[in-house]
Image (tube, rainbow, N blue to C red; front, side, top):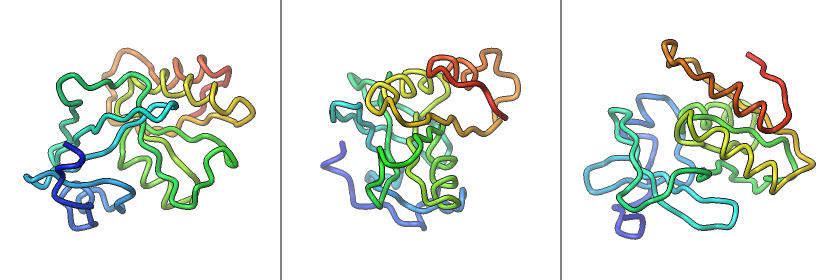
Length: 156
């Protein structure tokens, strides 16, 4: 899917335009949907798709747990605090505002596995979960769970 993508996404791609964020290492498929590469800390990859309608999916046979996309055009990962966001738009917004590397966990249930994997890889780095609150009826507090897994306290 990744190698057959139509090309690199630009800011006119519908999801990026709607969210007002830039393209950081993402491509588009033949239907114009955003393809976001997911990797684990060993470098294994699985492309995840995010449509303009915010439907997220991992291709059949793909892995999600512990996979993330890193927004780090300056290649500063490991030199800065480890920031993790649930979705691409939040991560891109945080990066645009701070210039810091930010990891995309793809969904709330993956925050904890990503936080654990990145803490193991960069044990001396602070791990910060940056979040949005677009799921007010969600019963499980993934941000708190991920914070506990990294030995950090929750912040709003």
